[in-house]
Length: 209
Image (tube, rainbow, N blue to C red; front, side):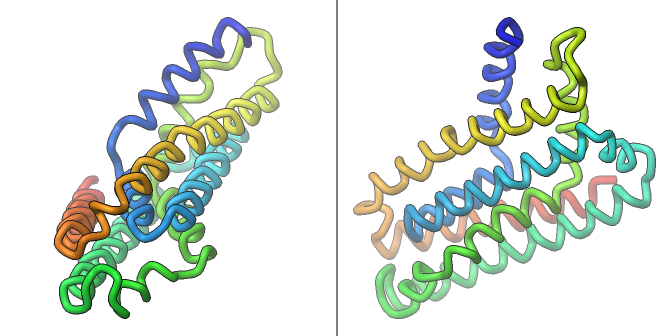
């Protein structure tokens, strides 16, 4: 394990650095507050851990074996992405009407912690590619001769904890830039960009057979 650990953490860094729906949502929520951003990270990493455990038991192989099961999860994931995109665009419109920290903007900032956590978790669990990736990613780093199930679960825990730290830097950075990003114009544009990206990702997932 000690020899494969540096390679595993390096691969985790590359995976986390690759832009995707989770990154967009984490940055978007961090615009509202550090608390919302960090709870979104925790929700996302709970999903990472769940898929890792499911992969350890070999259950995600069902997604690769059953086109119907994969398609159902793919459509659900597309709907979730589109919904998040629409929510971001609606928030951008409220920001334009009320200002970044007017009543409408404050309503978006003060969403519950559970809503932020649930959003990160839902986005990850509704992505079939995350499940298939966990199935193909984790086994590569199981040491030869090690018990497969405990090793896979341990790697899933390490993967999730590592990404909490990695994405926590995103939350911290957005928080440091809050004085600039809180301006109505900047906040509106960022909400529009994040909403548009999430919509496009959702449409791409829906059309991706």
